[in-house]
Length: 145
Image: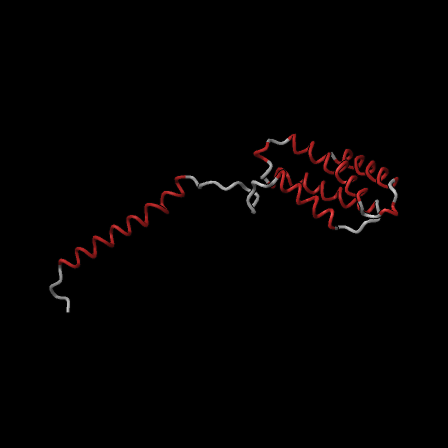
């Protein structure tokens, strides 16, 4: 995987270096990151099951490669990084691939019943016990001043 990434990076540098650097970080940069970085990221994400898209462990390397690619392209085009186009690019990536993910990177779901059960049963039992204790104590009012 390392040599393939190196070849891809070198190809990006060669192609990007051929772009007119006088144009700076204009549409050429946007085109380059979409054609080189996003195209590879899309292929890599298609290899994963969509249920794995929210798993940070499964996507961290792919996301890191995407980030590094945008940086390498920016360096090759003499652009500063990060920039407005990179921000917008990553917002679009997140809107498409990670819009259903929680902040922790895991899908939200209920805990198993063995964990959830005590949190439900214990307060109910304490409430019933306290109610019974109050009723029992109110019937035995002698001796209370």
